[in-house]
Length: 329
Image (spheres, rainbow, N blue to C red):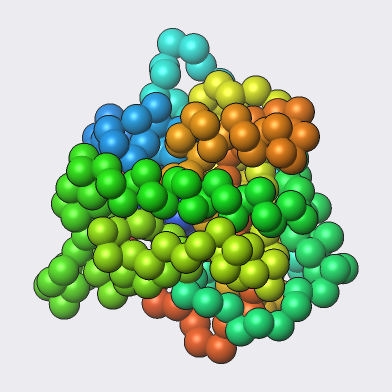
C-alpha cells in the first residue's frame, strides 16, 4: 500500500479542517498526530466542563465532529481514508485513527462538503421562516447516518418544547452552570482573535431555543410558544444504540456530516446538547418519542439571510502534537 508522506501544505490543510469542527463551549478538545499513511485524533486532557459536561459526552462528540472534517480533508487531498473509532484500549485518549491509502479522486459531493467546513457556524438566532423541503431534509438525514447512529426528524415538537422549557429553567437556576458559562465567555473579542471560548456577541441573552446556551437573562417562553417556534423549524435528533464513549464520538461524527450537508445546500444550523445532560429530560424524551436508543444531540436547521461569523480557533501549533511533523515518521 502507498503510505504517502505529508507536505507542510497538506498538513496545514488537515489541521485547519479539523480545527473548524464545532465543539462544546468552543473548547476545541482535540489533538492531531500526523504520520505517513496514518492520522490519529486524540482528546485533550484539559479543559474540562464539570457543570455543563460532567460525563464528557460533549467532549467526545466534539472530537467525533473533528474526525468527520479530517476525513473529508483527506479525501479532498485525493487519498482514501478508513476511520477506526477508539481503536486502542491501551490509549484511552485516542479517539480515532484514520488510515490513509493510495490515490483516489474525491467525489463532487465530498468536495462540496469539504468547502462547507469553512462556512459552518452555529446560528443562535431565529431562522427566516422558510420551510425546508422534505427531499432536502431526507438528504441531510442520510448524510447523518453512521454505524450505530440514527439521525431522525423530530415531529413531536410539543414534547420537545416541554422538555426544553424544563431544562432551561433548571440551567438558569444552576449557579455552577452559570459561573462556568461566564468563565468561558469571551468579552474582549478584539483582543481574543485566537484560542478557546464563546464570543459574547455569539451567545446573546436572547430567547430559548435560539439563545442556545441559557443565561440568567435568557427569556424562557411558555411551552406553547416554544412549541410554535419549533414547529416552524426543522429539528433532527441523533440517537445511538448504546451510551458508551464510542457512541458519543460517533454521534458527533454523524452530526457534523449532517451539518455540513445542510450548509452545502444553503442552510444554517445550531446544535442543542445541554438539555440532554439532565437525566429526567433524556428519560422522558425516550418515552415520548418511543426511542429505542439514547438521544445525544438535537440539531436545529433552517434558512438564514446572513452568514454567521466563525468563532476563534486555537493556533495550528496547539493542535498538531509536538514531535509530530510530516517528516517525523
